[in-house]
Length: 354
Image 1 (spheres, rainbow, N blue to C red):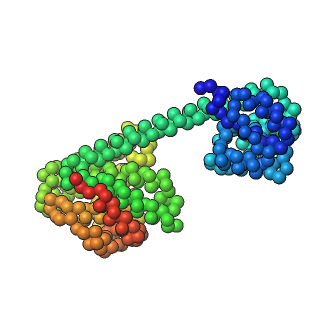
Image 2: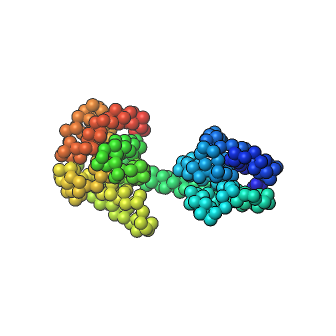
Image 3: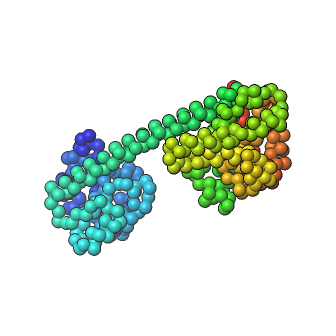
């Protein structure tokens, strides 16, 4: 990529003679813009961020140090290279400028060739950094897409065993996200259900029933209610799911996604009062991921038609979830559900079984 043409440089100086020298040195190679003070420099950057800033320090009003500090504290401008061009030649002045985040420090009077060389170097470094960031972003997107496709393929494998639940994955994934968002508003969960954790929950939720691949068709697809023995066999899908994802974790090494998915698969049938399975955990012994998934899964089962039952209305499903507050479900998660119950209904309508 040619350095000439695409790059924009903002020269910030209150002395016309200095501006003229820099325009002569750089104007033929770059798009050079000018600001004559700190405030106007910040306005110019806000309107059209340059690729590099040549910044004087001693200016009336807001000095260059203050301008640099403001730029580096703003996520939108912190990566713009700043080169101080100043009459301050003391080593402490230079150290202060570099400590504030400037990439270089040129003292006046300066040689034109030196300015040109320094500008060229830092613009080339910026070009390479931007290219690297672009490649990393593209690679990250590819990896995320691969992960998402793998997750839904695995989850779909379990769901194909039960053809009546095609929308279940999409609905429960979004129910879990809603509940986590609502819980994160509380003081108790603000630092627990952070944005990255909520994203993990969203991505992991589709694997909650991956263990169903280990349950016999005669049980999984039975059109009548299960016998006690058959239900005991069905319960084992939580163990199959945990073991499957535990094996995947061993192959991948430490992986927070697999940890989360394994927790959900293993504990989403535990109950707040300890009457669930497979471990009979109670209260906050149950991981928050499992407690959230438990409510999402039950609500969806209630509103969905199965071979052995008709779909329940949203209103009746809400009533049953409420009645499970403090027994089947974590009371605070039920409260979060009640606040977002209309959003649950909209999700159920938007992602029907097909």
